[in-house]
Image 1: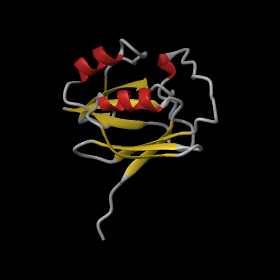
Image 2 (image 1 turned 180 degrees about the horizontal axis):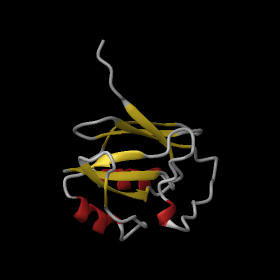
Image 3 (image 1 turned 90 degrees about the horizontal axis):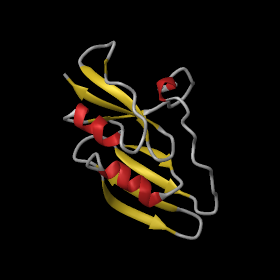
Image 4 (image 1 turned 120 degrees about the horizontal axis):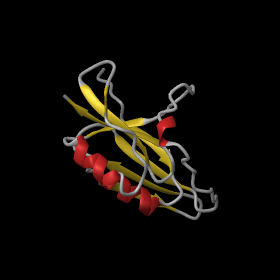
Length: 133
């Protein structure tokens, strides 16, 4: 049996805004579903797991307030703490993303082999951007 991670599911406030955010990393819409209770969009890139976006229009949540980007990542919480997206040019990606959201400084991973920084998607989910050395 061949096994691999198929997708990550994220609930968002604004489906269009979240799709635009993940499109920056090469994710495109594969399929979608919508009714009066929920909208779902499955997005995929050339490699890696897909991202499934859920939006519940009847539930309005306030935007998260990120007060201190240096507190990211909050990885001591039990459960899923972040998703990581691999890029080819980490400096250019950080420069582009920092126009819209706070980003940590680029650091070398303790395990070695890659550099990374953290930011947030439009809904406050922690996103690690990595580049292999």
